[in-house]
Image 1 (cartoon, one colour):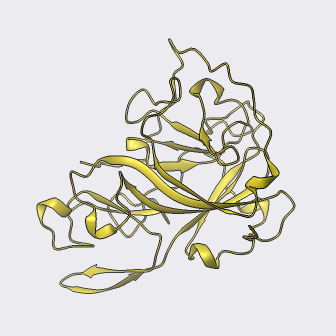
Image 2: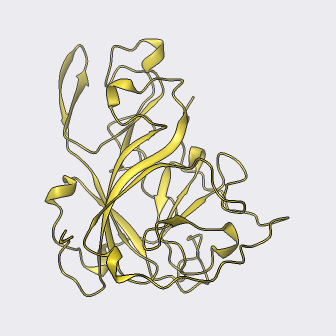
Length: 249
């Protein structure tokens, strides 16, 4: 059962050895192109894997790779997934005591818009980004809502389906405009959500979360016992100083 909460869990490095791989330099080719990540969370390198279902996962949007938990107080990662079932997203900011990257060099943050991915063109002002860890997850349209979120948690299975057992406790990513049940009629429309991340190094990414289920991107295929949590998402990076997101390659 995918029970969700705002409880955050700090990563422990006890007994873990850091990677020996050197730090990376952001490649210019990473900008202004559509990048797809499928089933993030499976078969992670040693030291990158969370200790349990609540231990954070760190990901570098600029390097297209997970990051060893030893490096949480660096600018090697841009987005974390934490909280129950690692379903709450946050940026990397070293100045916020409530951030997993606290005391590190990260200058990042995160926000979410009720807008389709393709329609998000303008990059928000830096003042709009939020810096605490794990602040974007469950949407108010579902159970355990936490404001505008990137997914709707259908606890009883009666928001998106008929309430039968196999459709209970499903997390629906809000990548597209969706019409859902209210009472006995399918009549309420949920707008798509797009996350925007300011990366640890000060660049920008817009992100469309597509699925939290392994090998399943069609919402009609998501069932209670489908393997989770495996993140599938798309994103586009823009350089610091840019005013718009563009795909040019």
